[in-house]
Image (tube, rainbow, N blue to C red; front, side, top):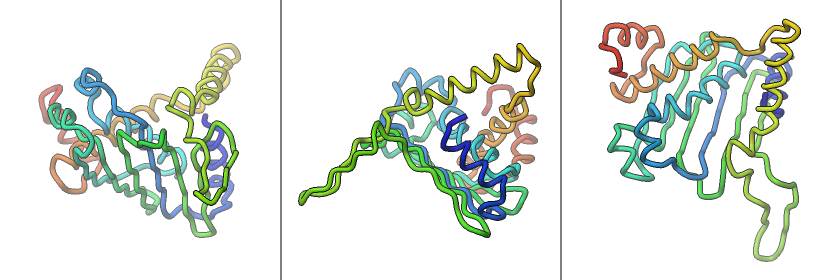
Length: 221
């Protein structure tokens, strides 16, 4: 429902950039969450990157078949205490044959960093950060502008409003939903495979992750 990502998707669907070959998603928070939050979050892949898995499916129009995750603790040792990472990169393989790269960080000192590019056979479409204003000051000392909008509540405020409006219209008038339960379930499955990939140190197919999860005691992952 974000105005930028929605426009990017429209161009991909219209064939403006041809067949998607590469999806690149950057998502970095301005500050890490508290230790109490980290303890119960489910980890970076389930709590943070899961939105990027969802966005990768949305923009590419293709399911993700395999993931290869690498990550580490570079910001705060507290993440390691709970078996989590604060910095990660995941490579994706789509059913369409396209590839994707998602990178997350729990701390970007310059603000909330949300950028996407879809590169295809006929060109590319990209989205940069939203800023409080478009003013750019150029002097002998350098070129300056305001930091990106502070966090997700500011960055995606209008998107949340549009999402709520769509849901209300669906309830009142029976209009179809743009997002359904399958979208949420697929994002969960991809996040599960990413956690497993990080643990095993190798690529993991989504189908393999589901089989391994089904064979483990509840709560293992």
